[in-house]
Image 1 (cartoon, rainbow over the protein chains, first blue to last red):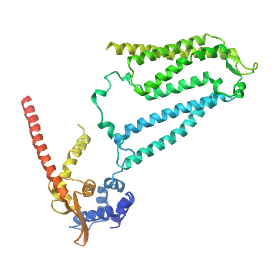
Image 2 (image 1 turned 90 degrees about the vertical axis):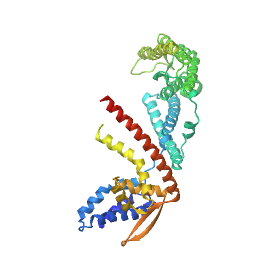
Image 3 (image 1 turned 135 degrees about the vertical axis):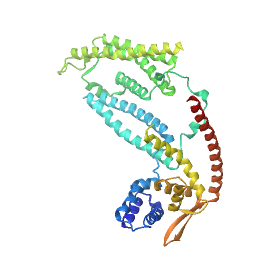
Amino acid sequence: MDLVDRYIAAVQRELPEDKRQEIGRELKANICDQLDALAEHAELTESQIADVLKQMGHPAKVARQFVPPTPIVASDDIPLFKHTLVMVLGVLFVLQVVSGATQWLGSTEGSLFGFIRHIASGFIVDACFAFTAILLSFWSISAQGKVISGGRCQHWQPQNLPKVGPDWQHISLSDVFSDLATYLFLLLLIWNNLWMSADQLAARSVIFSANAQQLLQWFSPIILLSLLNTLWQLRRRLWTAPLLLANAGVNLAYALCLVFLAFSSPLLQYQGGEVEGIFTLQQLDTWLGHALLVIALFPSYECIRDILRWRKLTAH
Amino acid sequence: MTSSQLVKMRLELRRGVLVLAVLGLLKQPHYGYSLRKQLQDGGIDIDEGTLYPLVRRLAEQGLLDSEWRQAEGRERRYYQLSSSGAELLGQLTEEWQQLNGALAFLLGQVTDENAEEN
């Protein structure tokens, strides 16, 4: 009987406190009945009792069968849980880029590594907090046996479903948030004289040339338009013919501006006299020009891609 | 079809029927082990890990009444169909008979078609 008692105790340890006594008592009665039936002809050895218990299953498994574990988030709410996480993490990423950019551009060192580290460390801290808060919120609702998504699945109309389209027509949230972060970063970079203090501005040794700065500022309305375009994408999350055309136009404007900027040397200038460094200003200027040409390839590709998609979409 | 698929599908097929079998047997009072023996004798072999938690769940849902009794020098928990359990058993039995009739017809059709093809 020692083996049976040990087995029951092991099962009870895996059970919630309020159910231990009751289930343990009942399980013991059932096991004893089974052992009695086997012992009708001859007394059972310890190894035979062990075989019966082994057949019952591991104590943890038996406990799980009596009290199945409840999931932290109800399975019906998992898609909503994931969607909420992506949305919140996306917003946090954009906010981190804004905060990292203001700190980076305002600092005298201006290390790119420091900028990336600021975004990464800040995002990880915020993401951990957000993940815990969202998980706890969903858990508290699921623990009450409620499902948030229930209403959404009940009140819907087939007529409101989007038309059948190719896979690319669905706009992913990661694309939307990375675009938002890029546009906000560009605006902060171009208009740094509006939000940086005079000391911070004076501390910078290399700045955009007056010509480059003016070109970038002229380009701000296009960035604002693309920002609005992206916010609209976040609302609809489906590529339509007008949206594709708008995106192609914005990307074409980006590509042209980048190419124009690349050939508008000088792009950089010293502020407050020449400074000794590893690279000369002319070298930095040439590399920046080449980098802008490479960067221009991305909006050019997106422009061509969107025009081809628009043609496919309007051909149907 | 692999043997593991067969085992899984058999389990799924039997899971719903098992509730009906247990409710049917518990028109008379039974304790855990005697219920399992009765099911085995009736051709339904079920392991303890499935049966005992199932009986408890049905009792928690109010479909079974239970009481501890002393018998043969040991205490045992006896279960018996409650009034709502009896009502549910009637409805489930009716449902089962309809399903069984429909399935017998459908499976019979399939058998006939196969015979014609051969």
